[in-house]
Image: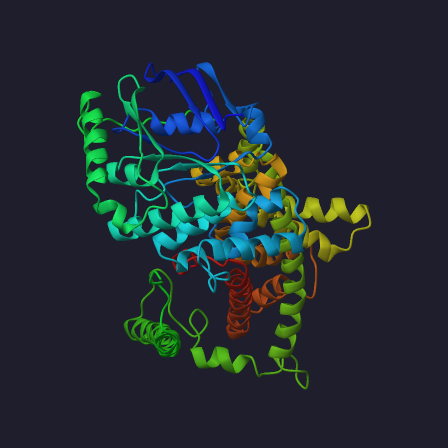
Length: 267
Length: 293
């Protein structure tokens, strides 16, 4: 059974903007798929449609064989946003256990899982810190731990490292691959960084704007596990060039950001 | 490991000590300046025979030290000093104000929680909540006392109800605003977990609204004292600061310092209530320091 099946998905906003048109994509379990494209290509909207946070105008999405609405209700996925979206009034440990509380887990079971998650994202010793006492990179790790705490089969990530500096981003990229390897979950990852997409992914989905559509899908054949050395191999540069050219062919040069970000309609 | 933004403890301790000393100094300096202004105006007004906006004399502006001395003077020859009476009056009014504050806070909060869930209800009810505050307290106080009195309610509880009438308003309005000030990202996160209304309310909306609630509680804390004092007057309730004010008003031309002393006690009671709210806020609100006023 495929992890995610997207069939003929289109999305128009009431203002008459067509965010996405006729998207077809299938993601297999254990894959790491990046959605890359310039601002306004609808990549974040597509991620939210997979998560049933935005309803498509046409088409259907299934996650683990269930319709996306049912998949959301049955906690099939965890999500990480660009902002960590941590609750200020909760400690690191309490933030991680939030979804577990909502799922009605018992206190000892929650505590045990939080302990595992804290060590998974290497934040041991910071359990009782509050979010505002952490750096941006650490906050994002808490957010990842929270998303994975209830062992969802699918992890949705919306430019999770977009607000971080390059060095922190590269370190978290490596950590994310380790976590992906340890948990065996499927990841769909939205980014606008070409090296990040190539380094992380098994497949890169290149999208183009106006209207948002899939321009091409590039398989990343670099071996696992990937390390800092991966970034220096000639094959890495070839793939980066390949993605860059696909983006250019898709119509919009990278870095074009004058287009307003799509506004979410109220849920 | 990433750097974390925590102050080094030693520096923080020295800083806290320094800040404490500075705060104490500012407080004393503030008192000294007020004292100087009062006595300066008095001295200048009496020398120049000012009559506008009021005639400056021993009745209208007694010396600060005579006001302070009044605390020690017996009210009747051979009786206990004024401070003895004022202390008990303050306890009585404080009891009414505390009950009124608690009642008003709970009613205001619950009202906001209910209103937060329905736009229609909000449109219908909020104008009446606003209108309720334009009704003069002095006009409704006797009605409340008489009305509740016929139901066998003790007068001091009626006064607490009057105080609550004044305190529920800021709590309701601010909590309502707080419940709607939730980060959209946090709402999306809760939606991704398929969280129900109840979880959304208690795990997200209410905690997000707490800084707003505490701002309102600070206003309500002082308002509850005012409400209790004003409520006592038309209720003809004896034993509180409102009664003392009415009483000392009648002897103002002979013993102005007694009224002034009562005013000081009223102010201290209000400040005490305010500081209690600040203390609870410090404990409850574990936020980034910039959010805690």
